[in-house]
Length: 62
Picture 1 (cartoon, rainbow, N blue to C red):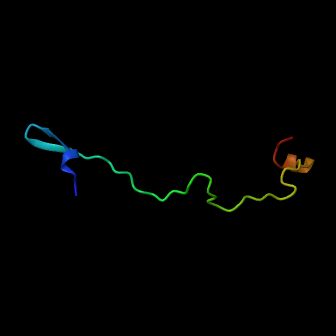
Picture 2: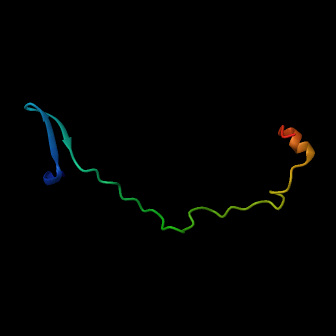
Picture 3: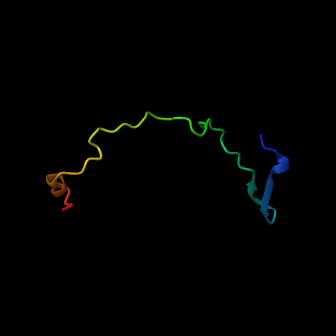
């Protein structure tokens, strides 16, 4: 159902070419800010340990 008060019709001569209607954004159930939406990220104990010389060479960093 169109709201005719908010509709605009464009024409070229007597021929209608476009009907402009306001866009209605879809309603989404978005989470509130600060709400956790996924699992907590965990790291292994040695995750931030320096790379060994062999690992540096394997990655072409040396």
